[in-house]
Image (cartoon, rainbow, N blue to C red; front, side, top):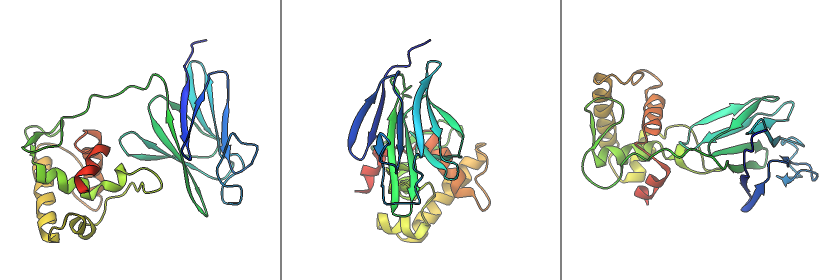
Length: 226
């Protein structure tokens, strides 16, 4: 059998290295390897397990009723339903929601592929990876970071939804109309260049996916808001 190597798990500020011949469980039961909150009955006794199989690390939702959240390294969130499992092939953060708060485990497999970052930050205009010859200015980028900061935050501050124009403008100290015009102009240029889904009720969600998957905004860009 292929050796998947050691999985690194960080939870509650504690770093654990899990060898391929070991299984790590997490939940509210005190018998779990990672005990989340024994007093929070909204959490499953055993919410999930991490185990190596066939040369791959697998995350399994062992709850019969509660889903797990999975946030990838771009900040995009998906849901792992009860009874399902997911291959851990890149760094992800697993979240278990309870009545008393959310709990997060950061997983890093040894062979995690690290994508080359898009050259971003600093001044000047930045060519997009998708969208033809569309240029994104430093001010455009700042507007995107303010709108989509929730995607970039670590749990429990992670929120995979765009902020409102008003909230993002307040964060930047801009008039709301300035932010709206800048984002709308960028959406128009991207749509003309062939980027799909940037109109309609879910346009901001589609713009967030474009910005995150192309690397136009990254976790490090949160520093631009400070």
